[in-house]
Length: 112
Image 1: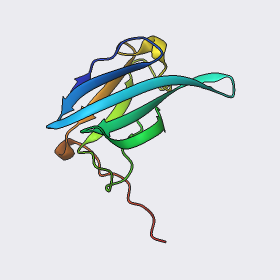
Image 2 (image 1 turned 30 degrees about the vertical axis):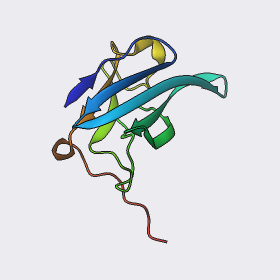
Image 3 (image 1 turned 90 degrees about the vertical axis):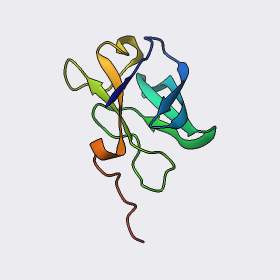
């Protein structure tokens, strides 16, 4: 498990190597029904893997095996069970990456 350092700002982008993957993570805050929510875009080698994923506590961001991303990303609420918001990033709300051997398998797409 690797903790990913974040800043307590509403919008940010960072480049980080996760398991040999050159990743770009973009976090941004948007209002939904007058409540701020945190979203994430993920790119590997500048190729978009995931766009507009809503961030939730202990909910995997990588949901499908076919996505070109090794491992898993999770937010962890260190004080309860709330969805992450920018005000508590890296303190209350931590982003962690788990290597493929450390993580539950991504959800498979339902057969049509």
